Image (cartoon, rainbow, N blue to C red):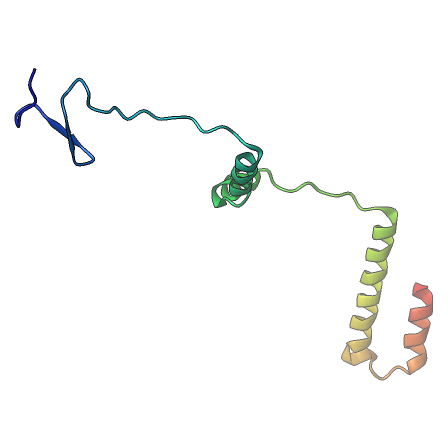
Length: 109
């Protein structure tokens, strides 16, 4: 078979016939430690992974932490102090002397 204008194929500006035309084949790249590290880094920086984790955790809700006795005591104290200041700021109790305020504070302790 002779090579002519009707049956040639060009590859890198060189003429080839069908039998000798270079075929492109893909080669595999070995997983070197550096390539594995780069792959892991790109996965960590990927916004897709963060978005997927967010979507998975979005429907779960939050777990309720039970109050320890110390937290319950602090909440009660804060509530009492808040009530004390509210009572003291009422117009009907403003004329009471400062001793009333100090007495209520001592009662809380």
